[in-house]
Image (tube, rainbow, N blue to C red):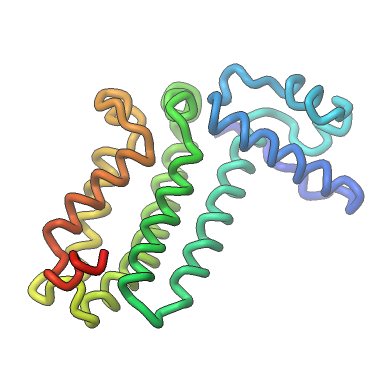
Amino acid sequence: MKSDKPNTRLRSQDRPATERLISAARRHFFLHGFRNVTMDDLAHELGMSKKTLYGCFPGKSALLEAVLIDKFRDVEADLQRVASDRSNMSDMLHELLVCIQRHTGEIQPPFVRDIRREAPELFAMIEVRRSRLIRRYFGRCFEEARKAGLIRKDIPSVLIIELLLAGVQAILNPAKMTELGYTPKTGFSAIIAVILQGVLTGTGRSRL
């Protein structure tokens, strides 16, 4: 990974510029890929001087890393919100899946292509953070759903999580998604559908 990092010594009045830059970069990178989106393009769109731009981030790799951190922060905030309401486990499991589908839907094939070619080290970071979130939130949800009779009790929750992680690692990587023609959203949806088909009880299937 390149050594350029976000400038942590920004003056307080510069922080809104940093936030606007991350927001614009996130929109363009995830939709169009980041290879052909230049720092000058972003500066022009935001009406930002190059001095301000490079005061926020010294290069595109640092900006890309900040975008990914921002994305994971949003994902975890949404997962925490969903997991905090345990009044109805079938609704919680449904909302958890909807949340993941919404967030994976933001990431389009050009970004997958570019992360494979241009920044494999950042994809390694994505894999580590993604696994942590799956273990933390899906593990908790599957265990609660198991207690509620939605998931078969003869299959340990830890085994379900390991199967989910194995499927995600095998399918949701740039090379395999390109080969199969999947997006992150369609790939994850296929994996979770196969796993749930095997582990849900009759009650779980009727409620979901």
